[in-house]
Amino acid sequence: MKEQILFPQIEAREKGFLKVSAIHSIYWERSGNPEGKKILIVHGGPGGGSQPRYRRYFNPEKFDIIQFDQRGCGLSIPFSELRENTTNHLVEDIERLRIKFKIDNWHLFGGSWGSTLSLIYAIKHPTKVLSLTLRGIFLCRKFELLWFYQYGASEIFPEEFEKYISVIPYDERNDLISSFYKYLTSENIELRSKAAAAWTKWEISTSHLIKKQFELRKGKFEVNSFSDAFARIECHYFINNIFLEDDFILKNIKTIELIPTKIIQGRYDVVCPVRSAWDLNKKLNNSELIIVNDAGHSMSEKGITIELIKAVKEL
Image (tube, rainbow, N blue to C red; front, top):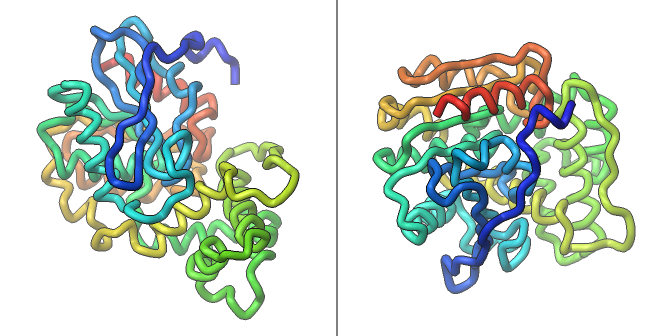
């Protein structure tokens, strides 16, 4: 992707931590114009953490860009912590940030799990959301989880799926999310690290239309690594059906039908197939679906990037 598509790199103008429970403190930062339109970036995972590169999707003269790391990941502390870490906790944290910054209402920008959490926050606090810009829609329905983690995506990336399941004993593969959870919460650091690496590599290796080469950091087994938080927190949420009733978003979609919503979706998204974006668009009256025909799941793919920036410019 040509870098000139994105806005120039900028630094955060302020940053800090917000204590949200007896256990957790979440990291936040703000960049761009303090008088600009308020937009919150909701990162994926859960457990993915926010990145400096995300700021470059917004005109820094027009937007007050707000980022945060959800509980247990990124720079938030404690790292990879599963206790007091549920969807409702994250929704409450977003609302605490809004109140802390004395913002009446704001725009939300989120992809993958970030789209899930953005939609749930909007459902619970509809008067606080001015617009939704969403990418790679994930509604966290049971069949979506089975598609990616059990059977479906496996038929498109069989070589990567074989690596993914290789850390799970053959007789424990009938329910891979449950089996991974067992090892990701193990006190055996070696087993935990291997499971975390396999889970994370599976997702990263399937996220682009054109497969990219990558390597996780090599070295001794570590629990303080990106893959540990990413895999553990994702699996923690998914084994618990994100701590909400199945199909919660579509069942409550009328709550947000007045919120302008742009949905940007890669046609060949294997992680979060286009079906979910299609279903959301059909149910959500005030939404527009843009399908990018030469893209997969990643927001860094050129077609996705162009459409995201275009959508944000219209706010």
